[in-house]
Length: 250
Ligand SMILES: NC(=O)c1ccc[n+]([C@@H]2O[C@H](COP(=O)([O-])OP(=O)(O)OC[C@H]3O[C@@H](n4cnc5c(N)ncnc54)[C@H](OP(=O)(O)O)[C@@H]3O)[C@@H](O)[C@H]2O)c1
View (cartoon, rainbow, N blue to C red):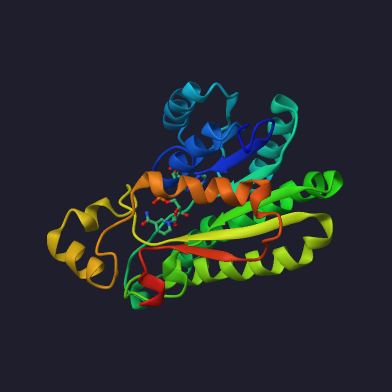
């Protein structure tokens, strides 16, 4: 029996990178998938890759920073796939720049997507999950919420907020049987950081602090997402699990 058979999961940022890997893992575990991001062609490619699992997929182009769009995403998912059990808030952006050069508009952009997107998702899903007295929310934070790196202040602030929001909702919604947890990845090479990892000097500098001395493989994120989305984690809530080759504890 697949652990997520009969369940429906929304995955944001499912068009590439970690979000695609998470979506494919949830599909392999039996969940029907509602795939969200802004780029429709890339979502179609994720749906094509998920087809081997034989699950139903829905593609819903969505900007997670817009609350009305997230509400529509939740409504259409329930209309088309019949239910909503799991919400993976993975969509995110990085703006790497010296804090002294950051503008209020840079701040708003990073906060609106990385933290506001999660607020929008949790709020839009709340009435449905509370009414059915069951739900799993998996937020994607970052090791940079707790480990500082020059240039990442806006991103780190947003991701720190993700961990705090996860903890708060975990406590507030425990009475509704909704588990809210977060994953905090370390370095995984994706479009978000490919340029930095393409430069040997920067790569060596970043990996120097990682006890495992390597980046994560995309297939290493899915199993944790499946665990947090499945009944195996029913007694865990408000937690953030670091998947970072030891970076956060070194
Ligand atoms: N890669 C790492 O080393 C690393 C480490 C720690 C945490 N993370 C986190 O992991 C998550 C995924 O990152 P990634 O590395 O896979 O980066 P990525 O390859 O750049 O993917 C980012 C995803 O987010 C989507 N997205 C961005 N803005 C959006 C918006 N406003 N509305 C909807 N979707 C949006 C993108 O799709 P569209 O552009 O099509 O909208 C894309 O699917 C992010 O939250 C990131 O902060 C990554």
